[in-house]
Image (cartoon, rainbow, N blue to C red; front, side, top):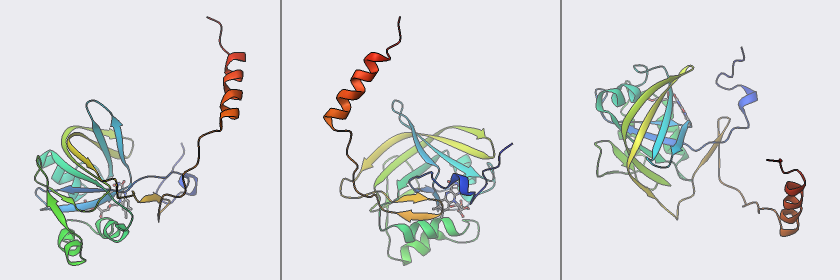
Length: 193
Ligand SMILES: Cc1cc2nc3c(=O)[nH]c(=O)nc-3n(C[C@H](O)[C@H](O)[C@H](O)COP(=O)(O)O)c2cc1C
């Protein structure tokens, strides 16, 4: 069995967003950073968040289990400090929302859920819990999106192997002559039916 535990170099080429997951429940208003935040279905629109520690491990998990809702704010460039606070301590020990506010960041109230959302994020989504699924050593919280806003002027923060990045230059799709060549090869290797 292969172990790709935290910090394993073989996982170093994965690039993700940073989801700032906001919740409100028995542990009080809370926020955590989750690089394993994915958009997995168009209709219904579903976002998954994958947490270590099981259903009772993290304050975020306990809050979602109890309240059946959570906010997903996709961190924008410039929110790396906020992400480090959200991911750097446990909601059971520290009121991270208060720390983040004192660092000058702001939250706002959404339309459908109690947890606040992060102002200035690249995307803000309000989710109702649809299902909890155990996936290997992580617990997947599947949220149905009730409301979502994307902010064209905000670029998402990228995260890879423990480091933050900005999105670089756009890489162009293949030129027409390369596309023509691909079409010729597809015709040559078409499967007979
Ligand atoms: C950038 C970043 C990404 C993280 N991604 C995840 C993740 O995807 N899943 C996870 O379980 N923990 C992740 N963490 C760790 C949690 O944010 C951390 O355990 C946090 O203290 C949990 O907060 P809570 O106890 O208030 O829920 C990440 C931390 C950072 C800094």
